[in-house]
Length: 405
Image (cartoon, rainbow, N blue to C red):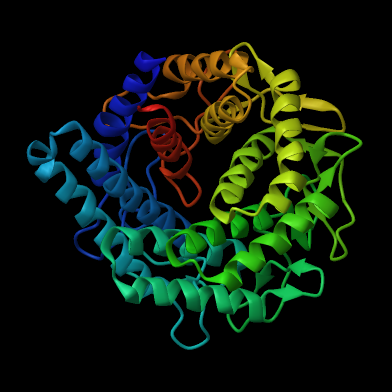
C-alpha cells in the first residue's frame, strides 16, 4: 500500500500540479477555461466561476498539505520554488474570484465571466456559492488573510438569506436572486427544485468553513443538513440516496448515483469528524457505512466504478470523477471499519484502472472525462467549466493525508 501512496503522490506533484499551473492566464487573471480533446487551449473561452473556485481550492490545499509533508520529511528547503508556485497559483485564482466573479451590486458569485473577467452568465446558483465558500476557507487557511474569510462568511449569510425555504436549500436564481428554473443542476429529463448534489456541497463547504472558523452557527447549519440527509435524502428501504426532488423533497426519478453515494459517504464522515457531535455520529455513521458497502457490492465492476443506474439499468460509462471519489470513499470506509480490508484492495484496484485507462498519457494532458466500458476514451474536453482538478487532485491529497504515514 505504501507503493500505492507513493504513486499517487508522484501523480499529484508531477502530473496534476504542472498541468494546472500551465493554464494560468497571466494577462487577464485566473485560469484558461477550456482545453479540447485535441489538447488545444481556447484562451477566449468563458471562465466558469465553479472551475475557478475549484482551482483555488486545489492550489490552496496542495500548498498547505505539501508544506506540512515536506517539513516532516526534512526537505522543506529543497521545495521552496515548488511551494512558491503553488502559493502564487492560489493567489492568482483568489484575486480573479474576488475581483471578477463576485457581483458587487447584488452580491453572490456569477456562474461565469468572459475570458477577460466581465459578467457573462449572471445566474446565481446555491451550488456555485458553496464552492466559493469551500475555496475561500482553504485560501484563508493557507494565507491567514481575513478578507478571504470575511467573503466566505458573506456568501454563507447570502445563502441562508436568499437561497432557502422552510424545508432546505433552493438552487437557481437570476442575478437579483429571483427564482428561476434549475436547469444547471437538473438532468435525466427532470427539472428539480432541490437536489442531493447541491445539499452535499453546501455541507462540504460549511464543513471547511467551520474547520477554519469554529463558528457555532455554521455547526448548527451542518446539523440541520445532516438531519435532511437522514430524514429526506437517504432511502433506507433501498440503502441509497435519492437524487432529484421537488420543493417538498419528493423524489422525482428512480436514479441511483453511484459516484455521489460514495462521495457522500466520506464527505459526511469528514464533516462528522470536524463537528465532533456524538449524537450525529450515531445517527449518520450507520448510513455512511451502508452507502459504502452497497456501492462496493453493486457498482464496483472490473476494478472500476459504474456511473449510475436509472430505472435499474446501469450506465457502464466510467467517469473520471467517480473513479477518484471511489478511491477516497473506500479508503475512508476501511479507516472506519478496519476489518474491511477488501475496501483497500478496491481502492488499489481503482488506481490501477485509472492509470491504465483514465489518465491521458498524451504529453500536455491530464485525465479523460470518461471512458467507455471497453476502456476507450470518450472524446470530451480535458478542461471546461466542470472539468477541474478538484476530484482527482483531492483524491491524491486525501490519500496522502490519510495513508502517507
